[in-house]
Image 1 (cartoon, rainbow, N blue to C red):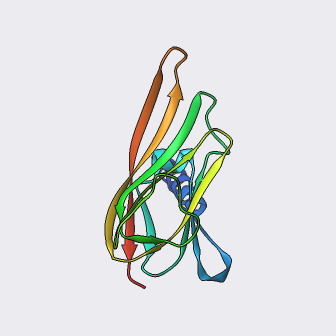
Image 2: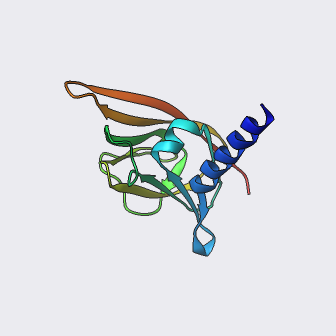
Length: 145
């Protein structure tokens, strides 16, 4: 039993490391893959620290038809290219990243307030004659410096 827990701990640690790599220049990079979407529940950002959120669908299951990350009313400023159909308010932004199999999508943001904010991570599965969407919740924890 303890060996299984150790292996599980190693797998979760590897997922977290892949989700939270560092960029040069003090920025942070959060990489969200199919594995992260299905297995990780919390991702952390810091107020005022520019964060590059990457939806990476370059490695995917064979029947997967696409991924999306929908962030509704997040307290962030978008500092880079604005994704299509983004709604920007004075303190909150709503946007979605979409990536077909083999593709990536990203956005640069700077968090404004602390708290926990839920995003929807969706994986579309092609079942031959129908589509199934698996929706998971990713909680972004925004913390102070």
